[in-house]
Length: 295
Ligand code: SIN
Image 1 (cartoon, rainbow, N blue to C red):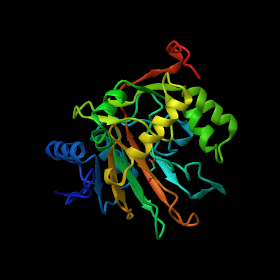
Image 2: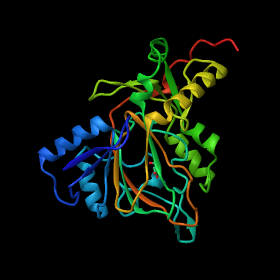
Image 3: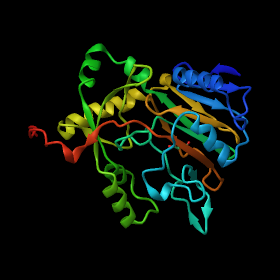
Image 4: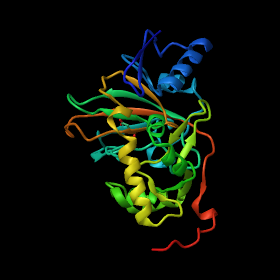
C-alpha cells in the first residue's frame, strides 16, 4: 500500500490496495491512521459492487440511513445515489446535491463521522468535488478570534437550507415533512475532534442559519467572514474524478462542495455511504430563548 500526499492541507492517494478483498485488521488500522492524518483519502481505479462498497465502508464504523427518507436507496438503503440521471422520465432529486460548501448532516444531532463516495459515471469535463480542512481554517485564525469563536454556537436548520436554495423538484408537502422530522439544532461553532483532539471550525453556508443569540446583522457579518475564510484555496484539495475512484472523507473536520461545473446533459453518477456519528448538539426548541438582543 502506497500513500501519496495530494495537497498541503488535506488529501492523500492510496494505491496498491483492492477494496473488493476483505481487509485484515492491520490494513484497516493503517487506513484509519492515514484517514485521520490526511482527512480525505482517494482510492483510484476500484471496481466495486454496491455490496463491496458497503462492506468496505463498514470497516470504519456503522452506516447510517439518510435523514431524508427519499434519499435512501431503494435496493441498498445505505447508499445515497447522487446523480443527474433521468429515472422513469423524472430528473433525480439528488441532481443538485452539494452545490454550496457544507459538512454532511450538520443540522442533525448526530453529524456523520465520514462519507465514502464512489464514482460510477463522470461527464467528459468537470464534475469535481472540492474539500476544505476545517482544522487548517481554525488554526489560521488569530488567537483573539479563536477566543471569540470557541465560545459560540450556531443554529443549523434544514428549513433555512430549503428557504435559501429553493426546493427544486421536491413536492412541497414532502419538504414540510422533512423539516418537521428534522427540527433546527444548536451546534458548537468550534468542535473538538474526538480522535485527534484538534479543533475544527463547524460552520457551513448550506445549513448554518445564524449564530445563536446574536442579532441577524452581527451573525451575518461574522458568518460571512468565516465562510470566506474557511474555504481559502490554501485549505483545499480539489478532486478531479475518474470512474472507479472511491473518496473517503472525515466529516468532522472538513467541508465539501460539488460545483455545477459540467454539462448537465452528460451523466454524473456517484454513490455515497455515510458513517454514523456520535451525539452532538441539542434541539433549538429545547432551550430557553436567549434574552432579547437590541436591534
Ligand atoms: C455530497 O456528498 O455533498 C456530494 C458530493 C459530490 O457529489 O461530489
